[in-house]
Image (cartoon, rainbow, N blue to C red):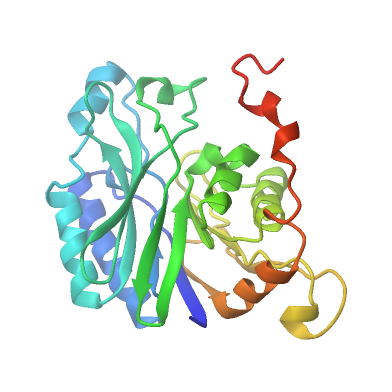
Length: 287
């Protein structure tokens, strides 16, 4: 596989699920016209990452949808019609409290990965959500070949363990739906996750204008040094694309063939880890 192109759908929600469905479908069609292999939505697209101001617990339960419900099926049908993968995000109905979820649909319309946000923002309204319990990697078949993809959602990126687990499971590109203001520190987190794991990172955020969001969707290719990339020694900028605040579709093209060669010869990722010294990382108390 040579190239993998992700369309970062930096959108503004419409205020209701039916409007978001219609707008989302149109965005996917535009992404396909621009050559995307996968279109990625910002976090919890079906409700526009909106929390009720009152009766939050009941309101979220009422707004949640099934992973195999009509909203997701509409994107499955669209993915098959477009011959393009779609990473759609939503508030997923769950046993008790809903989950903040992403489902990746392949170009044949099959659901190949469903991930629920592990690091929910329990200091805020996400305390009313059910956290995911693991990180997953899936094989995604594109017109150019197979690629291994993983996912982490928004606050997950602030924990190095999220991307580390995905790298160890074989992820080559990590999809990151987002809903928060992006500034230098959060950009640094994304850049660090790409560098330390030698993985591509693609983040889609809501456009400026949505409360507490400011666009700046971005992607990093995971290759921090340049000999194998460009023939030049020394550090290089891993940034592929960084959007401004405007609503739009921003394209991130990953050179997968070169990334695979880079991962085989460079010293980050899993090359020289010493897991026997890391036992404290999994101790519940952290001491």
